Image (cartoon, rainbow, N blue to C red):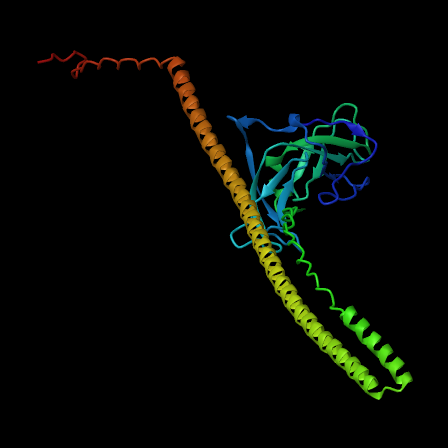
Length: 361
């Protein structure tokens, strides 16, 4: 299948070909990659295309698992996922896979020594020689385009370096919802008890009266006023001590209550955070299991499709054999039958010694 045309520049794949040598009598052919073109796909067997068995090499630095996966990209741009063996793939390991057959566009340089009527000879990477019938408008030194089925280029692509695709990690779980606890209750401290203003006024009045009597020369009245003032001061101090003791007890009770409420709030917050973290771990584990199940389902689906393709191919081959045998039987039936052999000649009569025929008994 040759589809040649002329171009002014070569279009070679870096990993498949090398720079052409215009002075050589033959040049190397190189496949060209492009966008997927359904017209380049080969014939199909039933509902599935013909498959080509290849092997791909695992590149260095491949992580595998849930982070990366391997794939093979055909010259037309079709992406084929390559399954890993049990236990993962190792570096430089050759992994088998199958791709649908398709036409691979290639080009080669016409040697400067080429003359009209000559065939263009090119060398594939595997060392195979390929002869191309050049079109009438071919000229020396130009690029000649043609195409070959992928099934005939198995040696060229077998062992090629596989492509690595990074797998997007699953989205992180949503942040846990933390229920805020209500603030601790506000404890209202009782008012600080004040001294009895009436008793103080009475003590001051008595002190002033005592001072007046003292000015008048009455010592007894002065002593009584001093004693009353002293008792009033002692009563005020005792009342102040009782108020301070009550305030201290109330503050200690309020602090204890606030400590208890804060401890309960902290314990509740820790419990909620632990429950949220456990839920996040479970969600992540479920996401990992779902991703692994999806990958396994995809591999099983691909294996099922390959098995169906093989069954259809075997059925098609059996049908072709039956039809071929039927056509042979019909051709044999239509061929003229050979003529029967002629009968043997009659035996010659026996003669006696004088030439007279002998009489039979």
